[in-house]
Length: 417
Image (cartoon, rainbow, N blue to C red):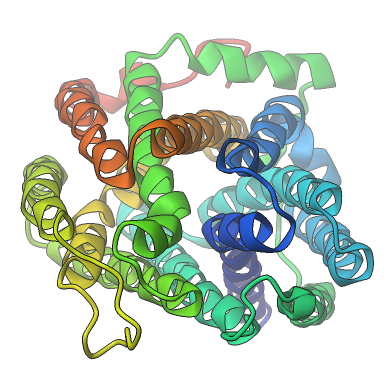
């Protein structure tokens, strides 16, 4: 019962952070319209989220076993609840920046804790991959719910109306509810502790970087998140400015991308029981590139309409977000590949590296796409994503080769085991 409660707790925690992390696109659109912020300035919100994730993960990941993964999740939720309460009270761009800094730091605690807890709650590679896919699948459901939740609080007649900030009261209440759930759960975390001093635990993270499998994986994770976050962050603005959809519909239509990610992740978990991971992921990357080349020309000739609804929206609004179906299996699969190759005591340090490089990839993708959006147009910004897609295919090929190294050579060296 306690194990079930713990799995439910970490899944719900991950869903809440999915809602907040992936609300950046909707929030960018709202601060542009409500606070009068320019696109270039608004694009920095991704950095206010991702850079704290990277810094906090780097500093605390390897030492989190001392605090305890369950306590770390509770701490992250409480910090975010406080920041959410500040949003409707302060109603300013600087408060929005503070929120995403808090979300970033807290997510560093949560993601390391969730991924490390998966190793403690499962036995064997298949069980690890299954629970990882399940948790990441519900993460996608959180993203999907986020788009509709934020859209529900937007005033259609006045998109800049600060009434949309009331959504944060709901999220704060959810955080408190999950803290109560986790407080009543328990988990044996003894396998996560290796008895190393703080300095030695910090050094373990750097020792992992000596492994070819780890290095190639981190490049793959960086490139994947760059592409995903570029699309996720700027899709609402693309819908509004290129496809000329109403603001609320622009946010809602972006949920197709989240829904595609959720379906693709669940479907990928089913397929991975029957096919090897590399052929599946290589096919997914190629399909992503094809969909970009097919969907974006559909957006070229769209114009504004007074009666724009779901029923008469441009075809591109439905086709382009389907790229999520092919992106979805990539991230949890490569995460499971690298974590399953390492001892459980190293999962926190490895997850710290995962979070750091994922955060850097997300910030890079959002900033580059935002700058191209501001200087040229959204179609060109999304066409440019073909370059990191090509690089991702190369890195996955190298990861497949590195993963074939016998498992005993992947053990952490003396002093880091």
